[in-house]
Amino acid sequence: MSRRRQRQRDKRRQHAITSRNNLQTLLYDVSGHSFEHRQTYARHLYKISRRHRLRLSNETKEVLCRKCSTLLVQGSTSRVRLRNGMKIRHCLHCGNVRRTPYKFKQEASV
Image (cartoon, rainbow, N blue to C red; front, top):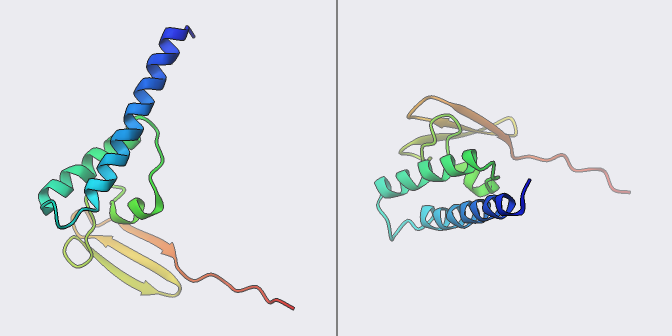
């Protein structure tokens, strides 16, 4: 691969990373932005991370639906249940279910 092409690819990736970081900060700014704006930020964030193969943080994964890229707000767009050591999140928009463990087994220390 030529140097010029490599530089262009690196620039595109850096631009995507800065866009992802900016969208994440806008996503968590509840008082500054309406729900509809935050919803579009969530959709764009999901598209950018998919297109450029960027990982999302664990906090961001908890507030985005993997199936329909909806912003999950507890009580309005998602339902959260705790059962058998699992945190179960239901997306009320598409019906997707995501289970994550929240209890970790303690090792016996002697």
